[in-house]
Length: 440
Image (tube, rainbow, N blue to C red):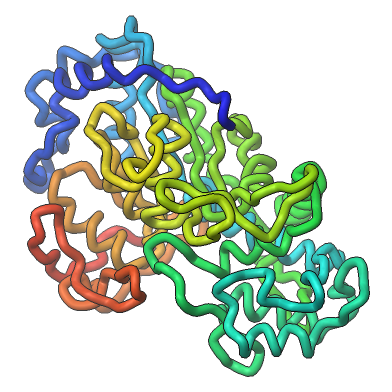
């Protein structure tokens, strides 16, 4: 990844200034075309109708979302007024439940458990798998899983499989004791990180083969399939969203530099991303430190977090850091900060609170698939600058959330895990928001 091309951003600054999409705008009035239509110079930047690659999959888009996305493509694409520039506008998508339905990290974990592909920890000490694992969880895992084996026999040993799956999926032991503690809740989700850490001892190529097997099974399984994992069942199917596949490919045809950022392990995302035409060198996921060609239980860092500190992954503020580092070439502590508009993505798409920081950084449009996640829905519905788009999930959309989102009291989760109000950039509190875009 270190040799990736870093695109020039000087022309992007001029483009943003010229279109008016880069500066904060008031929220549009009801029924207005939005910030793209309101920008005074935007019309001059757009190509004539039919010149830009067009989105083709119309079903599933809410309201004028597809039309606004097309205007973004027309404005920033190579077919627009800025087609002669040397740089490319950046678009960044979250992966799980944004580009696909369900979670490829989960699919891979379940495959590894069903096929006995997790290695026991060094010396039988489960603390070596995560610095945030509690004593109670380490004790429960040691009691449930054997030692002295090359791989844990989770395909047949349901007690061991159940304990690992409970710690991973619930963040608690089968006895109900919390499994992780002491982490920064805006930089780290230790349950997600633990999957990458349990890949210790395998090569990247081997993990990709595991992910490819899980991918084949989950794509072939009918929608709604449950698979046996230990003594219980878990989700056993995944689908690409055709609307997002269409959007990714249309952005690429229009000259956008399209990236994936995910809190799943990067070798896993690499395998799945090819299904929408995104190469591995444009996917950013959780990265392990390697030794002698094999993954270790330690993680690569970003910003002020060093490799092996295991304190930041591609999660909330960590996604911002990794985007700044890998896409825009920002190094050191600066990678943790919001960058000037000309060094940020034009478009971003996500579905969860885990995506909120990099969504907020997008200078053009921010697409959110509604999964009833408090902070991201508070910000999307507040829509203080008119650039947020909300869409129901394309498969099995959530029904309307009955109660308003608790934006003014507990919609935000702080670094210490405490809940508080969601605040705009100017410090004002976002009022509670009614769920208005949902499935039926």
